[in-house]
Length: 251
Image 1 (tube, helix red, strand yellow):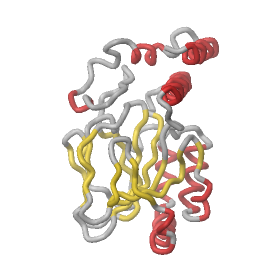
Image 2 (cartoon, rainbow, N blue to C red; image 1 turned 90 degrees about the vertical axis):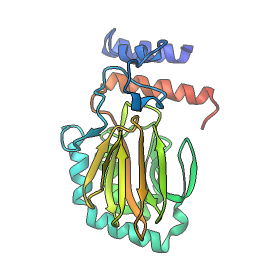
Image 3 (cartoon, one colour; image 1 turned 45 degrees about the horizontal axis):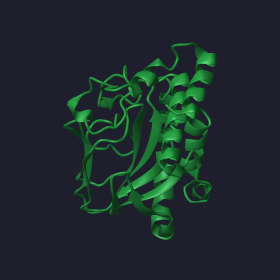
Image 4 (tube, helix red, strand yellow; image 1 turned 90 degrees about the horizontal axis):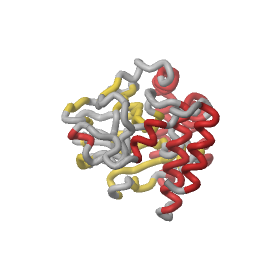
């Protein structure tokens, strides 16, 4: 560990106790995060001790349930504003740049990125922006290392099977506009999106998605802290990943 990470961990231990970041430290040890599920093999970081569960009930966690309820309640307005933006503000969408690839047939409109809300989106999709800010950003349920965006798959688009970087955040999908013929597969189990409802899954497991419909499929994706992580662990993980990105020359 670098001195910056060691100092950050020491400060967290001082606030929360000697064992408060032990799982994060174990993750950094040789073989850290082992054993892991075979379908998590492509993930870079596995925080030990988190339930190895691909699919989660979005209403099962008291910490996350308010986010789910607020998004589902706001769905009609979110869908209407998204449709208007797609029709009249198409320049606000961009090719989605996943850490593994970039796809022209996978479009994104960002609401949160780089550790902060994307303020320009407030005037484009105000309902989603307001709900996200109030229920996920201000409450610190969103993982600041990642993002929130409208994810639009054009007809015929497919996202190849892959694992994301780690298991200590979890991916919430609000199904905004879902044509027939769309599906998502996580750890070998395929499910459809139900428009107006949320799905929650651990994207350290191999997953893929496709749109075999006749119009764009859009979900609102929110990267939330895994509910089994603790506050000191979240502090440590932000310090750790921020320093790693700095050393790698990432913005």
